[in-house]
Length: 142
Image 1 (cartoon, rainbow, N blue to C red):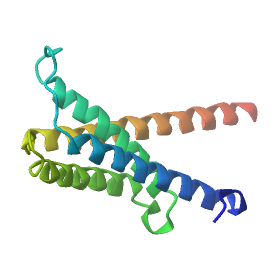
Image 2 (image 1 turned 30 degrees about the vertical axis):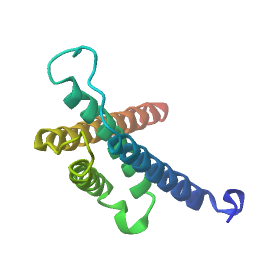
Image 3 (image 1 turned 135 degrees about the horizontal axis):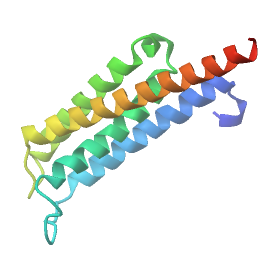
């Protein structure tokens, strides 16, 4: 299947779904190795912030992918957060089998909250952007 032969909507679906699979693969790859301890912690719980950022990115990519699938479109935000949380849970379970790694419920909480925060910010930004556009367009007709 060539990407150029797809319709515009289908192309976005394929590209964002591919990005989602690649990002999930990257997370799996990173969690499959032994985690070297940092030479010094930047600040307390820096690893939780890193989890929140990585899984915030996962949630945003999942949202962009899911909103292009008709079956998931109407609840893409909810499905994205659920997917992010479940993928975080599966990653923590996976880490329990990796030498030198362990499963941590606090990491899962950071994953889930990172996804939720990213989605809330993204949704609020898009709502505000749509509001600004509609207000600026309505002023044109006054």
